[in-house]
Length: 76
Image (tube, rainbow, N blue to C red; front, side, top):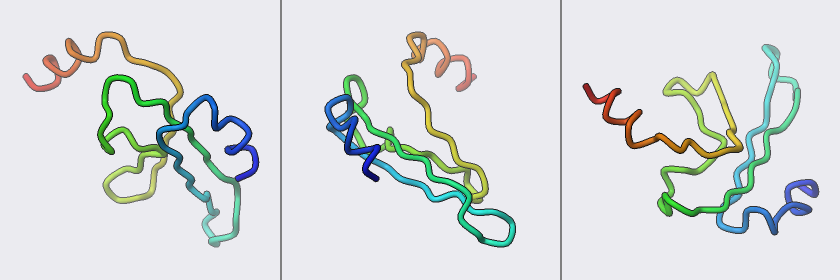
């Protein structure tokens, strides 16, 4: 958590943590994410994000510039 606090200035709007465990439930690592909300101010952009079954986790640092076009394509 100290590393996450060290970059708080880069993403003051939200923070998320996900502890990664092995198949024997032993600790394997940690995802920490800081968010600067610019376009989507809702909680839908909270990270780390999990798959529906909770088995997969991702954190993404970047911006998808063509998100409107991608959404339209996926909705078709």
